[in-house]
Length: 213
Image (cartoon, rainbow, N blue to C red):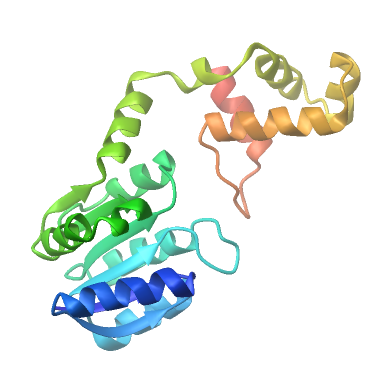
């Protein structure tokens, strides 16, 4: 099997290269960023592309976006995504399209060589492979209303955000520091699954979710 690997950690990348080569696979390219992943997949047309989620330069979802683009351009390439943590919004986004020959597993699984290599083979053969912890978190997320995860103080902050208050205005109303308000707002974004984005106004999206709920 011909494989392209994208992982910004040199140690992990080289470790994966050695594991897969020892299992009889050919590593046609190993890169450290999402742009390199796209270009190498385009050039080599591998059987499998393996990528981290968070990649340079922003360390947000560059790897995931690259994988989604590869799936659109080259649907025959099997895709295995590695993530440091369970990130439900990324898993949901990845699984919203064609799921054949697709995997999402935690990096911790690489330490269990047999389990990791089995996931690689199954994805390459066309299966959908999800880390058990990812499945568990997705089920919890599906069953729970995101607004129920918000604390009472975060709800107060959201109400004031809905009124158009700035961080300074919210801080004055709640008699707390602006840094405390910023921490509450970041907690709200996380619990409502609103990731950083270049073009979306996260405060507005949070308020809309609150009003819809």
